[in-house]
Picture 1: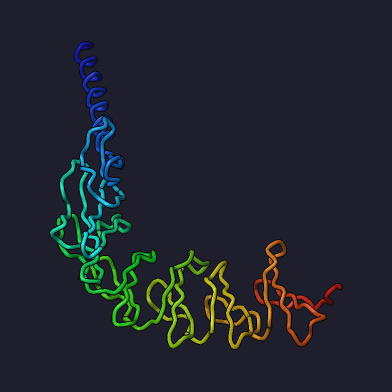
Picture 2: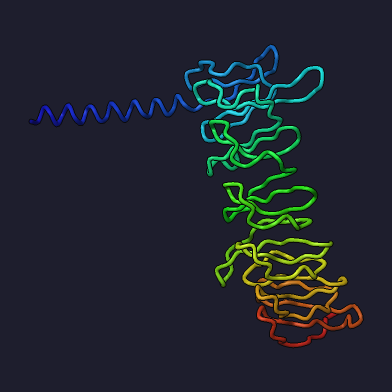
Length: 279
């Protein structure tokens, strides 16, 4: 019985060591050809797995993106290898770009004929390659640019928010109402949507800052003020300068026509006092 346990434990250690060795062998490292300057990949035993014949290389999730330049046109084509040196996405697909930035969702971003979309490792199209730009902004959504407008799609390619915005930013941190907010613009004015695609702050401001601790600094006609996530004005939009004193958690506002005074507000918008500026 003791011998059986001993051999069982030895077997486990052997399998563990083998798995570790396989894991180490699976990770490849970029190397450069001293004669051509081209790049390829080798394993930790200095064995060449992907020949040094490419102009650039990058890796993520044990997958390896390489680029191959066309001598006459100067164009580059992208391909994707696995850690054994086999093509996942070959050059015959004529991809002009490959990115693994969204692969946590099993999506590989590709560009073809100047348009962007997503495929999986089997080269099945998961999100049509029809967009001028695609970028994951967080919260399970991808912003996509089409026909001059931005909208939002999910990781299955479904349109969640229609294409109507001139510009979009990233979703910020969760606020106290348990929502995230994203800055958007229509007709040169800015507002916010939440993670559900609801237009919670209309696009009426010349500029807005991302919500931080439930407030955003906004401007209209070069005047500054502060709103909350409900769109309520906490600090009137009438100041020429506005800054937050992080040590006191207070806002200091000034008006050019009254240069001798500073107007102090707390973060909830309560006016504290007017104080004279010391010379």
